[in-house]
Length: 110
Length: 111
Image 1 (cartoon, chains in turn blue, green):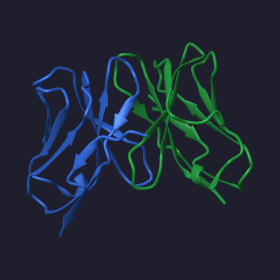
Image 2 (image 1 turned 30 degrees about the vertical axis):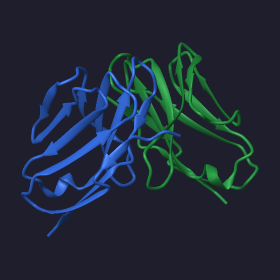
Image 3 (image 1 turned 90 degrees about the vertical axis):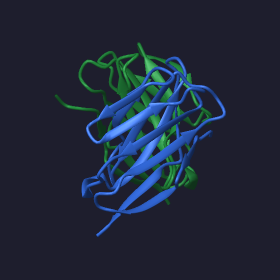
Image 4 (image 1 turned 45 degrees about the vertical axis):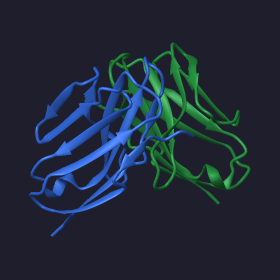
């Protein structure tokens, strides 16, 4: 099945660093979502974006809905140990299914 | 307020067998979707149920079927299991147009 292109595939950073990741699609979406998944658990919604150009924050997380409607970006500022996990973007058109990205695995180096 | 609950958490089956997975949606949600997540990949959409009917279906064979009950809970059935069906099966609920909320999944292993 289709998956969105998400980069980077993995990141190794030190605590306190900022993180940036992005997601691109060949199709347009009218909703972009960012989820985080910890081992043995389901994805947890972090941020939802509903309008092209929208910039939304949730604490240290900031996400943007790309102007072309084919991409989205997630930034995490001042990373902490609990940020470790896999981050997935997901696009949605109207109320149809979610199409997920390939995931970005975030690891914090002690 | 209980979130999405799935049962069982783990399951081991043999090729050719049939399996039923269960999901209770988050309180107030009326739509249930099922996703398959293979190891190292993002979730893939299987199908969505609303008002006890299948509304949308992903690219999965007819061996995958489902049901939604009047209390909005749902079942996913997979017949004639193949080794490739081994995955984490995620249930998600929503009250459209709100975003999906996921359960912790059922880990299915087919041997």
